Length: 241
Image (cartoon, rainbow, N blue to C red):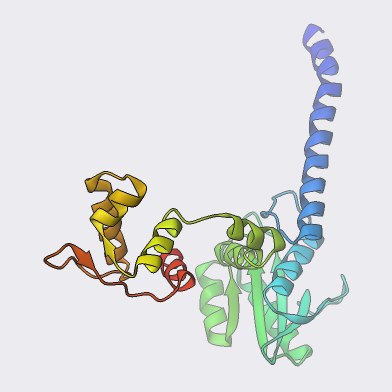
């Protein structure tokens, strides 16, 4: 009896907890769509929400003419779209286990029905060995959860917030690059005199820049040539390696 009373008393707190979690998730999704940031996949998504999620990722990655098929009688296809001149028939599978051959068969037949160029099965999980083999035979593309996440990340790099965040972030070598461009050469003594670095730190920085092919090795006078012509060129090399 005592345990029953305790459980009943806990119910309101549990309800509040789950309601707050749900509100947090809704706000995260809402602000993500509004401001161009696609949130991470959430296991609590319904199948329909997962389709919308995939559609948004595709849209941000350059797919055009995207449309969701009707919920019933979709002939094994959830999303239709075009990318770089080819038409796509996409089957979405939100699963808690690996996706099997049935999804591949559905995507293939749906692609034929809608007369598309490419059939795709996309999932938050992974695929069975049988599904992979059948997809290979029938030229059906399989996008697992890892690949979908990479597409989401790629889409987010184009978002407003990401671009502005990248602009605000200053590379730690940026002021050094500016100095080297002004002086037209690089040397340990130059960094020591200008930034009051220790000899060891200045030498390490220039060795790092040499590793990135931005400066030459030291000559007998301790001087190094520059292998870049602008700050933008140097920053692109540093950020992409």
